[in-house]
Image 1 (tube, rainbow, N blue to C red):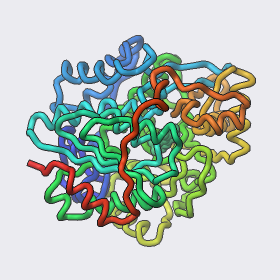
Image 2 (cartoon, rainbow, N blue to C red):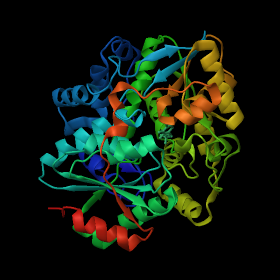
Image 3 (cartoon, rainbow, N blue to C red):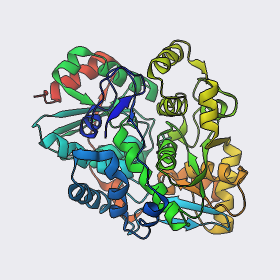
Image 4 (cartoon, rainbow, N blue to C red):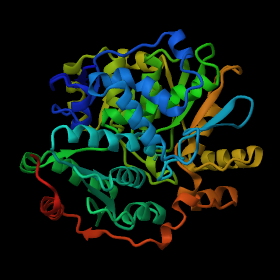
Length: 466
Ligand SMILES: *Cc1c(COP(=O)(O)O)cnc(C)c1O
């Protein structure tokens, strides 16, 4: 399997190199040159497989020669063996039409674990072949940082530098990062906002002196391997609900457009998906883009669903490329315009391509609270704020009554205890697997919101590339 960049000029790479690279060298994102397709009979044959086996079967065409089928299965068994539920991503019924797919049974209580547990193992596997060292630098508003640290802690050939905005992540989120004391994990509390931290990370990726000395890479959802791992649970849910004979719709709480793009990939592979419902909060750039083609960034409004408080959704570029005719040169031009003005219009081809599968809905604080209360009072289900926004969109969508609608539950409600308690009056308990989080020792360094300070810190601790 060969991968090409959405901006058309970076070299094509195989799966192993795409995984280690993260971003393409022309600033674009990698996608398979062509989508692998499963026939209806091949999809039917996946029914009933345990999750790790399903994962290996769905991912094998993307992995190609980079891993043998036996090795891929071993890695899937290792990654998903760490989940607290035997089904890995259990499906729960709410009413005749609505279902919730619980993606939060991993070590850090958000769906990011599904992809990052595997990505940690893939990094280790591919690095061991070349005795090189990887320096992961990332910024987090909470969930990505904890999932990446859990997945990479203690791995010999990787160092992790994770920046979070000092005092602006929840206690649970901070402790999930700072109580990991492995020597290759470096938590940095930055004086400033998430955007400030993110800007410093971007600057480091473009700092040729740093990239010349260290093999710097990314664990956010620009990394193709993350999206690939997320395709699997669309298959898992649809198979349980009657695929390939029956179509299924999905409602996805969306920020960076990674999770819902994985659903698009599943559809391209032949999974019969009726519709993908993109759920946003009041930070609704994607809702505007999908309804009238206006992709223009405003300022971020903080909400109770912070992982969706995003202005620019990196992975939307992958959809624009694929739905718009795969013209890398034209897209590079379009993206340059967007980067300069923070606004662009979708082309007709992009709009029509997206409309074939996507719809969208926007939820404000009231909609979110109502969805959370509805699930609690009618179904006894406690949802986190992100999932509640997804459910609001699912219930607002115009889907035929005989098509099941699956809302992706992206975080455990205990991760957002205060917001859940405000809406429902019930305070979710942290599950046993993180139970002593508040008794553990914390370790992190505080740095001023100054690039030179962060750069000196990373350069002083990271291992140079071979
Ligand atoms: C990251 C995250 C999202 C958004 O997912 P994207 O792939 O960025 O669209 C939604 N909910 C939760 C809880 C998250 O952690």
